[in-house]
Image (tube, rainbow over all chains, first blue to last red; front, top):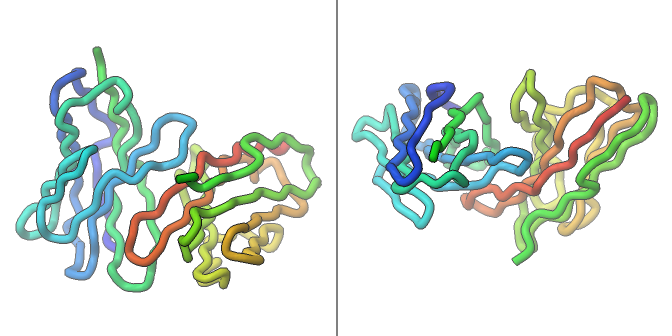
Length: 111
Length: 112
């Protein structure tokens, strides 16, 4: 699976949009981009995933560049409860269902 | 719907004792994963099952660790004998097809 690169940390103001970048320059055509987050003392929580097109759900939006080498997770209106570690993961579409978690981005939402 | 259920939530035991962690996956999910999280190594996959059959156990650290899935609704991760370096949070996750994995809240294990 392709590796991902994320900034170690970022701050965000409550009520503002949080834009979390992720680089995955070695991604191949059969690999999805997944985002999970982990709030302190809880298990990782699925947020969103995509292949080529931009995706949106009730939690977030995922913007994938045309060359697929990078993506941005957007939390449209960050709240204090969005403070967490956010993981960007590349996963194969094949029968390999493993997820490889990196260090992620620690996002702190401030009032 | 009930999510992935893990028990116990916390376990403290002495070195050398046997430890058994339990997991009940989401009903209908045919994949089950065991992960371990430590400050040093982050979140790492230990083993995963498909239809109760172990598919990849390359992440299991050593022979002291074993995992079983006797049926579709139950799995165990056993450590025997336990050592202080096994102290970590152990997560179980389940999934189906190409759908996202869903994680339990973990078992926080402390080996004294």
